[in-house]
Image 1 (cartoon, rainbow, N blue to C red):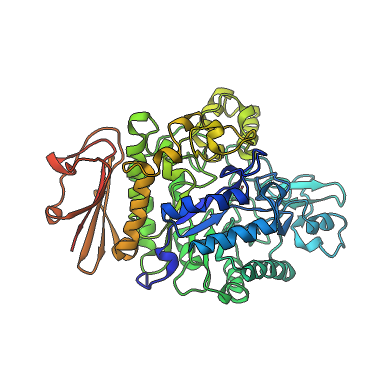
Image 2 (image 1 turned 135 degrees about the vertical axis):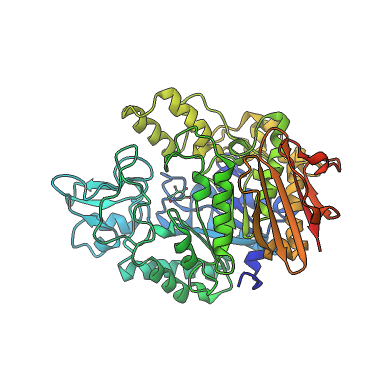
Length: 557
Ligand code: NOJ
């Protein structure tokens, strides 16, 4: 039952991308000491849990999502002592820490892979997925998430290994029970340190169909990296993880499940507690994609967004728990994407988007800087990008003649992961107060206007608005546990829904567009209390219309 009370349903999670959060030693790279310094800021925001993107030792082909030692800290980020201090300081403030668990693959520099590639009879050979070629080609047409084939030929033993991500991220072989035990031991080691749970990177991809069938080719000629999603043993392996690891403590788990369907999510996140607490699904991140291809300037149709969100809200009702997000380190900034980053509407639309998400049923995730309304960056040249996904796609799609250089630069400025990865904007001093050195990626030039120092304490800032949304979740059970129902499914401008819990009812109204939209507050809400709104005056809902990007939440009981 979704009414069953659990701390992770009542929590708000804040994602930190350590490389871009706060640099404490002037090397231009964010670090653990920097996070510790800023815990009071997060406490003031009111969040309960931090999801820490990977901080483990890594050669950084994919900014830490390529791990070469799961039990040590990347030197750029500090030491294990820095980690322990950060964990203790977070706990002192009542903030929990979720580690990013990246175990679909390791780095090719992980000692397991170094051994595995040495010879066919190496004891570590079967830790990874090795196959012979087919007629001189790759074993099948699966593509890597980061362009090209998902198979790399290795001269040493003249076989191919599978890498659904970069060539430096070989996939682990989860069918090997020794691999599973290695992962479970490592997870237990972190739980013993006192961490509070895991965000599980592409966990839906760990079990591959042993027949390795071809998939439908996409725009670059390869099948999607999601082809193996929800494979034959995935639920069995996660249940084993629950028994051998997760049941030991009262932790929180969220599985990043690319390619997950609603039916599969009901298994991953079922409230019977056999697998995970919740999953990240990505259907709403595809509403402005073209049949799965994100490199496009297609505009989102609000009706599609509502259809997806509602299908998940209703589909998991009483069966499993939703996670709610607009942003993470792989997505562009939501205010630029679904709102407006123009000066006039930036704050108002950031607040509207936050309301729309935080009032739904599920656990909300805030990605660093979202609480300030940080925006996409605009780079004029590919040389400014740092993300391998963006750089590889740029070269591949231009070389194949799919897009011109101008088109690719435009699509990157709309969709590149680097939009989310520019340094956190702390204040209006040099480098936005992120670092005294040269930041590893350019700071967004709008930091003089958009920064934490300017917003903390300003009562009508985006930051203060997020504080209030988080407080509402603590004050009103209905925000957490109420049942969701969509209103006006066919409206192209307005996203409106209700939440119901016993005698109480909320009405959430959001105008997604930069113009007025006709709307009358339903009769039953005429005398309702307004819990939150994004225009300062009290004219919400009057005159039968909503103002540009207007939002408000009404409550009756
Ligand atoms: C999903 C992560 O969120 C992304 O940043 C990463 O590149 C891939 N998984 C590979 O680990």
